[in-house]
Image 1: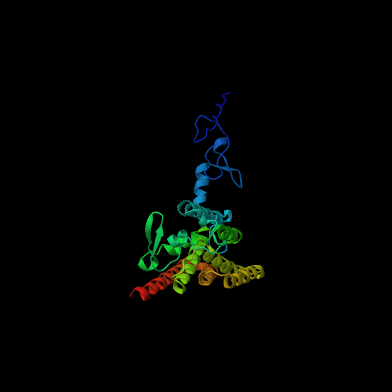
Image 2: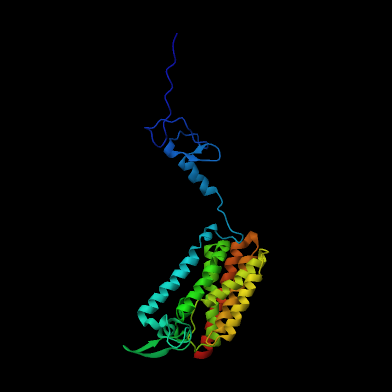
Length: 304
């Protein structure tokens, strides 16, 4: 009586020296323990898992953003940039940039003149001689961005960073990283454009233009989601009272940031689901173009 020869044990398709009786549930190839990837049923090989990820739709927030925003990376990065700017100001222009003489908020230093919102160019006498700081009228449009990262002392800086930490993480989680970053930057620019138009001769600086925009967007998005808006309304009212009662505060910058943030928040929150990304991109583009147009119109009205 003839006996059939024993069947050879299968070997892993990635590691031929390893015997295995386990197969990928998707492609049926033999896989060793190092190649096993746990699946809902059985195990899959690395290639099948990678292929499945390509066709799997990534999780999105209610407004189309990536759920990666839940880690608050953009919020932390913005806080870090503001702190770095404070260190740069300290290194270049001294302790007055953090602890101003004559008041916690009231003293304008060379730091604000160098990077804050300012229309005309300014000649400053320093220990190293005369320095000319170019204003927006003469092409220094970067001031509309750099002003968001420059503050009037450490109290001003810490208050704004606390507000950014408190509100920013929630907005970033619901909007996603890119949409939240766009909201912050557009609101900050919008507030700075308003300050430039209303009072171009006074150096304006601070993240509060963007912070007010976050407050407004938080309210709009909370309403869209059917959430409780009473708390953010109280915060808004308190900050508006401070804006119009505390001397030296740029009310135009705060209100400009508030209005811009509300507009951007509405675009992000109410874009139709089937064309959401397109509508959001076009809407934010229109806001940016409008801010550029207002800036150029102001410059033309003075320099023409």
